[in-house]
Length: 224
Image (cartoon, rainbow, N blue to C red; front, side, top):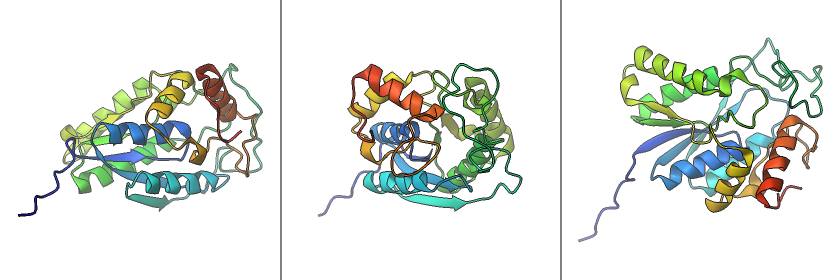
């Protein structure tokens, strides 16, 4: 008699996947914990589609089903949505929220993830938010996720059974690079640069943070 394949030990999870180093590492982390992962990739009118292509390849390579959700921010309000707003060369360490902040982006993305998780009866939502080496985004902080967990608990049918996990929240980019290497994340497929193109610009905040992490970890970045 043919035996049935055992279900994943940890159940199902929704993973927000942008194609960058952090979200890709988060996907592989969730997989390593035994979750069957369903990826959400957002086409939200961002400056380039390079990251979307990367996210698709990463999800497919990890053998995880994915959905690309096309949404629109007609009011712009970010350098990632409006080409008239200049993406600054590394502004890390300066005060204020950078021009690449997309108003309420993680609130919107997580809201879609909650809806998807409820239909899947998934117990986890994974997001690659990071508060150690970050560019000043208010929706990448532990306080934000703690507040959002309360929203899920009080505003959804199965809320008390769903939790948002951010396994990279307290990690430096060096630690994330180490973890990505250990989990065998296909680093050559990831994309972090805000400007798109065929090669990373090396100057935007995201490129500088990524380069710092790989350098400190002693790992060669295959994109450079």
